Length: 216
Picture: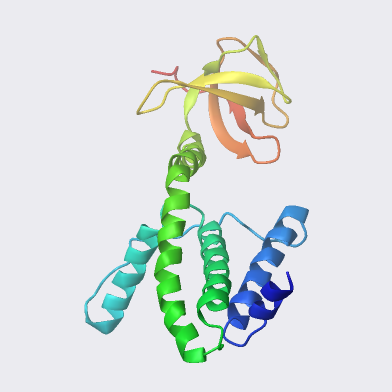
């Protein structure tokens, strides 16, 4: 433990140690619910490439993000893993292969360390892609349902709970957990409804009676 601490506080390893500390602080604060942090950071890797040095830089950055699966995995998780791997490899490589504590040699190790860490992030996140992609798709599919028409599926739909079936342009009809909007009278099975919102707190869709023509 003493050797690890000594390596972690050497000048050429200190930036990675500080970065790892900030990452740990971020996750601690996020898990404790202190502050308004969003650990589910995402990024659009379809960067526009307009040519020239700037365009090439953006293209290389976009390629790197795709390599580490940042198009599917939350960016903060990717950066956290990259920081952890780089810190661990830097400590180990300098401890075993740089006993003279040469800064020049440490910088050479750092370059190789970066590519090795990117590869490790790729390997670790690859099995998680399907899971996070499913979560992302589920979240994205909530919004298109707003404005959809359907009918009450449960025996009763009131201001606290009920189930409705709505027709989707693509795919099978969706069965939704929902509640009536404030001030609306209870509905019964078969009544026509309209989806007008989504309650993030209760994770239920907000429904009102559909007074227009019947659902096609």
